[in-house]
Length: 157
Length: 118
Image (cartoon, rainbow over all chains, first blue to last red; front, side, top):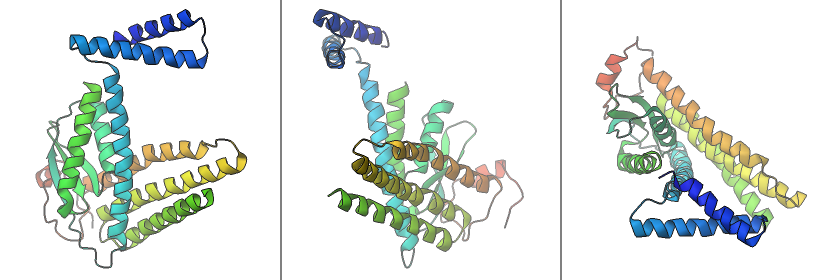
């Protein structure tokens, strides 16, 4: 899949040479046109366009920022509630990621998920233990974990 | 217009930081306080920094993005600190204020067992 990067650069270079200009506009236009050609070719042959992965990466970052906003408000609401009715607890979730790097990224992002701080990973890497601020909200934590895991798998596999 | 936007961001950020401090003071045990110390403060501080970036950009007449870099560094470091604090409490077996309604890590804790700390 990664052979597409040199192809992409070559297509852009051809475009720029044809225009006889390396002005920023032509550089950008060259990469856009090259990307469009690669996308069309992959569509035809059933291959995977490599920028798909970049797309998942951007989705991951957007989701991460959104979770930060949600969690800030979530914890602040419990902190100033006159009668905080939260029930803390530790929950184990199944873990599908296997490499050090992706697990680190996952725990980092889960820390910023509303009311969740990962505290441990089982020795065989099949479970992750998360301290939840509110057990009533466990489904939201599970959802966020699944989403992050899916996107991380998409980006790295 | 920009005045309204920045004032809104500053007030919202200050309120979040304030709520976080209330959380640290009011929550009942170590782990809950770790939650309160980390999350609202990150969001509140980043709102303050974004407001300062917008305000200074408007006044200088050019883009001033240094505060945004600080936000990025905050997002990278604060979760790490929060997590390490929580993990330190877990490994040294800090007791929660009340028995947990659900505790899936009970056996796991036995494996890493250290003397409990009150």
